[in-house]
Image 1 (cartoon, rainbow, N blue to C red):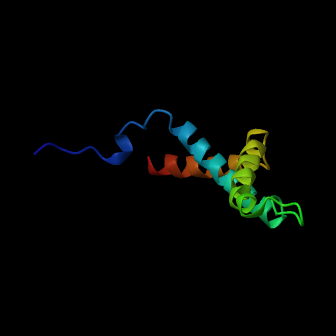
Image 2: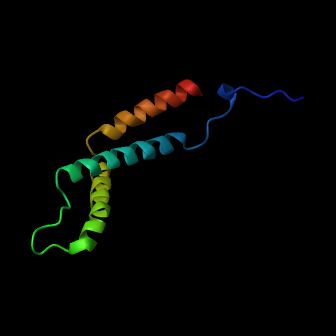
Length: 93
């Protein structure tokens, strides 16, 4: 029966850091989107609001705004998440 190499000696997948950074940025964007929602960004305005359609698409607008905030540097959460994810992946591999 062939011997199976332990996980720690297997090569790491290419682009692992890029994938970890993308995941960290998505998490920060999700966090910022929820903060924008709590702040009232995208709320339907009084008499001249867009009705149900505006309510339906407000979450897409908030998510796009949050994603752009992360691309512009964000609040630093993605970098901390990336470092934590990378440290954990290095410890496992």
